[in-house]
Image 1 (tube, rainbow over the protein chains, first blue to last red):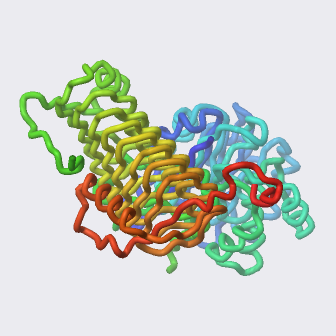
Image 2 (cartoon, each protein chain N blue to C red):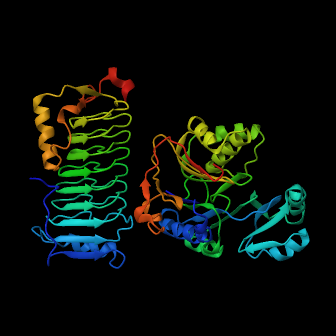
Image 3 (cartoon, rainbow over the protein chains, first blue to last red):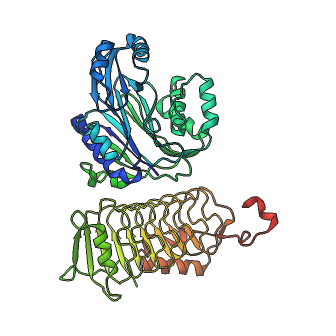
Length: 293
Length: 241
């Protein structure tokens, strides 16, 4: 099964509430995916700085690690975020790998922070204090594993490029072939998960110059299987369902936001939902919103 | 009887349920305990997309739901008249036996699936697989329907004011399909058929039952039905399976 949610704010006044809104949406989707949960939030960024989201084992002392790296780390449970100058990113990653090889970089980008853990989604959201986070857009996932093990690595979102992430409900049938092709193209996939292949595919397309919309359009011919994807980029938010559209999806749009949920239940608590334009995204049709547009 | 327009005035017999207070289990349990001749009015507030609201009812009650419902609302319905003032999730009126389910908004996938009798009216659009394997229900959609609708539909009628998506009526048996707008493509063994006077009379009767007679020109509908070449396995058809 799995539940996915997404929120793209159009009204800046809602930005301080982004985490609280997404948190409630994830909570409602607990019963679609009780194994694990994750979310990516596009918050504040600073010019020339890259945020690295790190994940370590429970009890990791991010304060000490930050001192060793020479960059303070803002810790949230098993995750920590450090900001480095874009020019220093490679050096800091190398230093991190040698100092603490057990620490994983789960996401990187100028604005994206990414958190995921095994456990009931409502608990995962609470541990990372999602409710207090602010930002412009966010995506989240509650997982009921079908294609690979219940591990933190197997939890969504998957990020395979800067400020890019994807959540997936469904299962891909040609992921092994696509993975081989992407690896030949130099993409680095870290799990056996089919959804990571979809994320890497979009990264590959966008690296080649595609917009998010164009990359999603190409997915229709190159990715086979069941899928509803919700994708985030630094400035954009996209949704795509496969042509058979087995996996559920419902969206709501108001002057203030665009929201996605696997089911309407996830949207029921949003402000102004009674007067929102609620619709089911059509199969094989690319939907995307971009703040720059 | 005009199912859509028959109304019961709210009065002392109206039972008001707020699903923000009463649990769904309590509501459905109360509905399941109704006597088979109970014709009272039930008004349900705060449905919040919850699943299986008012499914399995077997009494001639009227149930008005104020807001969007989740999966399987009005499933297996017998006798009851259920009105949803909002959108409906997957499988609304699934396996409906009799009575009416009326969705004032859009319906998601598999609306009226396997329905054996009664009527389902959708004022908006219905998405994929509307009327899949229907076995006698009458479905009227005032908007458009998605792909693979009326797949393996056996009996009943599907009447669409708007357009139909791809593969309409794939592997169709004897359900009668009427579409006023365009059809993206027909499924295997589904063909367009002449609209004769008997079919216009059938359409008129169904629209009258839905309270919609006169809203559209019956002459604008086209009829689709089974070519009946896939009823029984024949080795020449093996590529169609």
